[in-house]
Length: 88
Image (cartoon, rainbow, N blue to C red; front, side):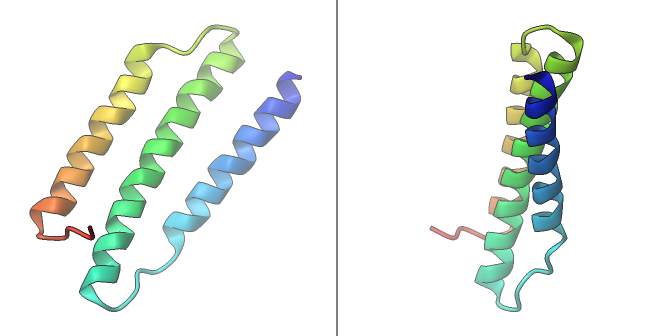
């Protein structure tokens, strides 16, 4: 069971890295949307790493690890919004 979960986590992390590697589009709105998606991808990556670490150590996921991922996302997203990049 652990091997299956580890392989799923590994595939998910690989897909997130591939999405981040895609070049941003040409228009300003598309660049802003890409920056927001990049921040969200990093948040998902960080949370998956929290789960991966907990799983490999045989422990439960710490709320501090997950909160750190949320905090880093909030900072990154605020930077995108500060560039007048609201896509909503």
